Image (cartoon, rainbow, N blue to C red; front, side):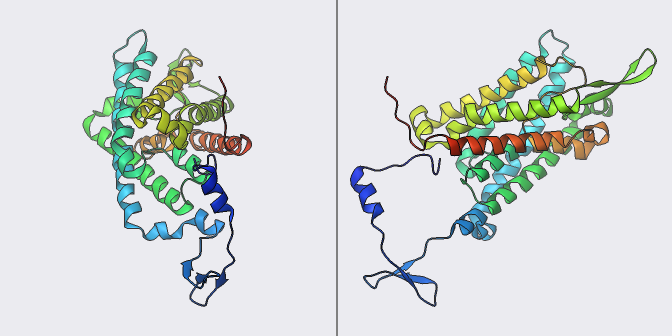
Length: 306
């Protein structure tokens, strides 16, 4: 992760510490003491904004992978949610978690070489706050991820009948559900405050336990990219299982952990999917801020003695 580790031997570090004085010319090119022309490094604000990414064909090509990957994630994951509930097994949460871990791992493997394998605004926002990507790139990614979520929900709506769509809300993110009771229709589900805390805690645990490995090149190199992606899938699967099991509340679909996945069905299906929808955005955002603060507090370089 940028700012978290330093590569190079002592000689390189000493060489890097030698600062040359520069004078800026009218053309914006810097001239060093030896008279040679060198480009100035971008300012911190320039790095954060990354306006050049708005006009970068590479970034826009990568965004296509994010769009397709997110659409595939929403279609397959929501199909799995509907299928596991329909099977009426004793352990639908366990089956859902295992299948979710598998499909997430596969999709990250498919999109990583092209876009970095975000397919989730939570990951993109965390990468922005830890200065791994620019603001411009983050905005592009999040917009196409949301569009991908809508396309995935539309694809699912096209292949399921109206009764399944109504019964299972296209596998979307829900806090409550309206169901018939002894005295008429009743609303059952999870309190908004509880759901928000689950999103924050599960989002932070995800970034701490697995997203960290993907961001930190030391761990990614030591473990291998494929192993890191498998760990990410397993951690997300476990968090899905925990969030749906610990509450055991009818009407609550578990921690969303992906605002784009929650947004797609909400736009396509609408209705009660909009009730408390903000929780699935605010919770992950707070988790990302907490994670970014954590990365600032820990030492930049660690050495362990066993």
